[in-house]
Length: 211
Ligand code: FES
Ligand code: FES
Image 1 (cartoon, rainbow, N blue to C red):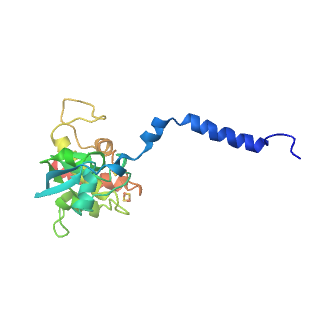
Image 2 (cartoon, protein in one colour; image 1 turned 135 degrees about the horizontal axis):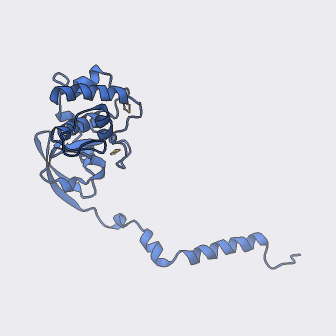
Image 3 (cartoon, rainbow, N blue to C red; image 1 turned 90 degrees about the vertical axis):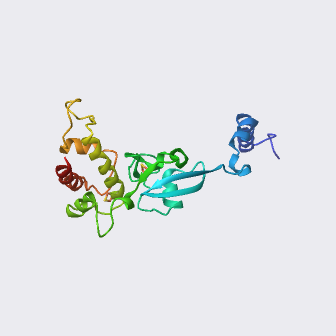
């Protein structure tokens, strides 16, 4: 015989169910629906000049520049590390400036000049920074290396152009490519293998030649 009309367990279950129902208003359910499930992606044409070659792509407007390079143009030298702008593995040079390709949409770069690691040198004719990385063992697994090298190429141009950094002691004098400057300016490029001292050596050597 049952003394109570409902057990404690049944009461708790009923409470959870009704609380959930009350806590999730109907508009929240509607907001949670995936809008892309019903509407097709917006596709746009984008023209880029990649490593000196004109490229025209039809892209979902949500495509990052990194995915456009890797998945659409098959330039897989540019790496995807974090996909959140935190590691620098995806660094490419756009109109002379280094950027994280994972943090920018391809359609924002209509007509841009883009240089990836594939556009810097070839196995038979390495870019001076590529050669210096090899000479100084500036890598171990090599995953961060394309981003490190693209970043260093643009960074040395910034020094040549007199752009100061956070560690520059004089904001009006042309900065020198000291180890402190190089470390500060390359701080957006993470190396999980910890090859930092060799990377700095490689960049310092090239900076001495171009400086
Ligand atoms: Fe772009 Fe890490 S993959 S910053
Ligand atoms: Fe492995 Fe830099 S060489 S992450």
